[in-house]
Image (cartoon, rainbow, N blue to C red):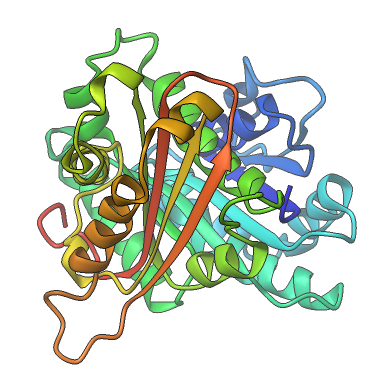
Length: 330
């Protein structure tokens, strides 16, 4: 991996999201809750801590007050789960429920201090899910207040999952909806972290370039797989990138106001041999045309990567950061 990622999941939703990274092999994972019963179904070996107050019952202020005076318990949890060597910390939370909304801001503060105590830059981001508007006023109010604090605190990266978009795109069964969200987001993060650690014989997307993206606020990601027979024109590549970023599980943002981006291609050798440079340029140019096109005087940065892979066809991965909040959703 390019970076040692560490995770702390708060509340039932945040705990499941953090554990999706554990399922991929990440081991610096902690889970926090206000009731022990919400740990049901999580991997046994993940470090857990409950404040044992019987849950927050959608009361974000109650959850926030619960952390007051008990910061040392959180610190001990981080020490047990993360140790001393981490490059980025991600606070995972469902913004809507009481525990996730109420504790996420406090966890960001504690995680920043924890990293500084280990001599690390306080790189603390958030992966947060936003509720559907139909879930009720109190839940939406929790999400708005917590998200406002997190954005004001300049957490980076800020990855915002829209529960409505998940349902619309994947139409998962009731029992599969959470695992669909969590595995999709975790796998995208994992792929970028993996690619940035590998030297490519063609074009390398390196660790410093990934850091630039992760250090610039609101971030979106997407992935597309193109079968060899579906690639007949460079326009097929640029269309795939547009579609993957417009139709993702993340909250809808104006991509034209993003300022940092990357496009990475992974293809098997027969596919890479078949395609001229025009095909790859179409993807890079699509990203360059999109970024900053709605910002006066913007100077967007687009990173590139081309890697050999084993799967037939072409996989296209894209990430954009330094975006504005999802105004429509909010």
